[in-house]
Image (cartoon, rainbow, N blue to C red; front, top):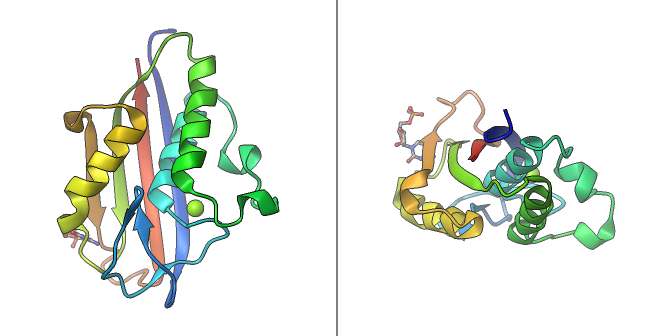
Length: 157
Ligand code: C5P
Ligand code: MG
C-alpha cells in the first residue's frame, strides 16, 4: 500500500529550574521549569520530527542532526522539523502529512490555555488545517514530576 503511511515519535526531557519551556514552538512563560537539553528541548517538535522521519523509514532526529555536533547546540527545533519534513517529502512520492495527533505529559503548568497557540504553530509547520491537529495534555499524576514527555503520530496520504 503506497497511498498511506503513518509515523510515530516520542521524546522526553528532564525538567530543571532556570530553563525556558517551549512546546510546539510556543514559549510557556509561566512554567516554573524547562527542559534540560542540548537543543531548545522542545519535546513536542522532536516527537513530531521523529514521526515524520519514521513514516518513511528515514531513521530518527539523532541520525539526521547528531546532538554531538556543535552546529546543533541550542538548535531551533522548528528548523529541524522543517528540514526533516523536506527530507521526508522528497521520499514521499507526492504524499503529504494529512493529520497529526500528539500527547504531552507534564505535571505543571496547565497547558490547556496554550492549546490554541500550540495547535496553530504545529498547523503552520506542517501546512495543515487546525482541525487536523489534535493535541492532548496529561499529567503524570505525580509519578514523574521532573519529566516532560511528548508522543506524536503523523498520518500521510
Ligand atoms: O493527567 P490528568 O488526566 O489528570 O489531566 C486532566 C486534564 O488536565 C487533561 O485532560 C488536560 O485537559 C489538563 N492538563 C493540562 N495541562 C497539563 C496536564 C493536564 O491542561 N500539563
Ligand atoms: Mg528532545
